[in-house]
Length: 389
Image 1 (tube, rainbow, N blue to C red):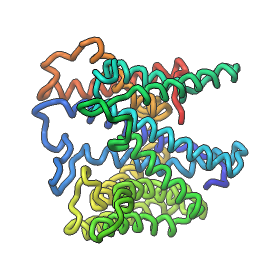
Image 2 (image 1 turned 30 degrees about the vertical axis):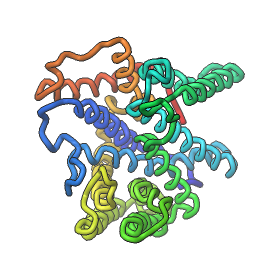
Image 3 (image 1 turned 90 degrees about the horizontal axis):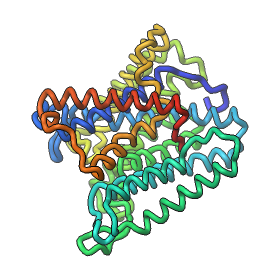
């Protein structure tokens, strides 16, 4: 696929947009009391998964699906191999940087040692991030470069200003990588796999099994700390690879279009069977990032995408996608909008009415809030305010 003309598959945009919409809804719902158990993440130690536990895998899955199309676009644009690798590495690095900053704004900070509110620090971080990764439309390239450098300098200054721990002795560090950082690692490993395997279906499928085997090995034998530290990244990468595998099934070379739906159904079945076999030894858990959770989630995502592709691209029922397509076209900015709103409200000492924090009103508000954010993304798109890693 990387050597062919890039395709535009509306079902991929729809999948990405729906995933972002549901992620915003789930995040907003996390603070609501009295919602059904299946609408909240399964607690640690519980062998099972809920509806929200599939949202992050869906994000990883669509990242994997997008890799062959992004590679094809780079080839069509005439990028050299070095430029393609540089773009891939810089994109992964950007996701890791964003993830680390966002994680440190959540907990472990020491405002007294920093000399500023964490909410001010967060807002300044988002301003700098937007300066660095904005899509500039004006022709003055020197100004665009200057704004990016200003944003990068701001990020460095904010990193140096950060203090954490009870005594303020801790500096900015990956306590964990955050959602965007975890996506960054999975994107990096899956992208490298795609390039090294040259999009071979068999090779990518074997790598999915290899990632699951890596986790099992890391959790059952004595191994160096660095080896065990990559176990969860391996599981997340397996989900992205399943997305890559699905893209190759539906859109890869070799004339598979006529049997793609059958192959997708077979892939989902195989993933579910492997997850079932692994479950007794490695229980289903998003928090522990187990391979059984990852493979069950990937099976669900394969079937969801196949259904979306049949509905949107085969049956051409596309009008409903207008709600989610703006977010799909500007996913990074849409994702961080709720975090910017939260930091701004905390800084201004504003809060939503207490009635929206529990039960049905809270559930309805979470859904409405997700739709509002999607509408805001559409407005920002029309204003040509976009972020791109």
